[in-house]
Length: 76
Image (tube, rainbow, N blue to C red; front, side):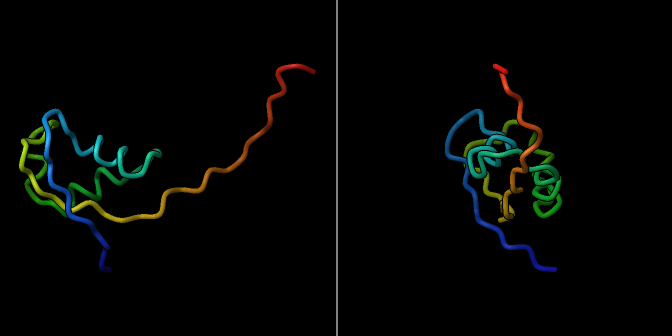
């Protein structure tokens, strides 16, 4: 199976893979951090904060669709 990816270049300080995922998708993405680390050998070894200039591949996935749960009425 081939995974579509986009190239990421860390251009500032205090950037983590989690932050890049959040800034890209603006939604919780369960399993995406692990998938990103799997397709980028050695990335986890750089530590939680990536050095400026680090390049890695971020998988392109479809964000989960929000499902509606029970509606809460504040005033009944």
